[in-house]
Length: 111
Length: 115
Image: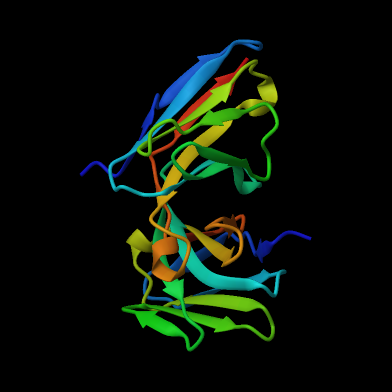
């Protein structure tokens, strides 16, 4: 079983829509959680960390459910510039900073 | 402050040839990583380093070697390239391993084709 599983999509939504991505992780020892964004033919970049109590950054909201080993990302009022692949990422504190990446969920926002 | 840089950006090799990919970071990060990214496979860790002079194997280390002689540089070597090593290679670095220090900063990638 893969460490991190994501629905690959693609998700195609109109501007202004709300879209949600989900992710599950297999190792209960996972301690840190992130969403990275990767534009086409570019490197991944950190979008936001995910905290136990949930957190929000502008139009982006991340949630963590440790009991279900489930992470989510909600994007409100989608913009054309949100089109990218979103990578769910987890880290186990014991593995020297190693990150485990999901395969990514592709989002296209159309006008 | 250039962040993480990678050399070269593109390369085409013939089967059996060797090459070295160079990664450099100017953020004084202790931890450095090499990944490969293939369609449908996501990012997979090849090797990583937790400090100058130290390296460790990741998920897919076979066919690759690495060296970290200087803190700012992490080299990835292919001794005898195979078509299965056609991929996009990303280098990354991080300050630490806990919380926000675990954020990894990525280089722009090297697109390698092995014929």
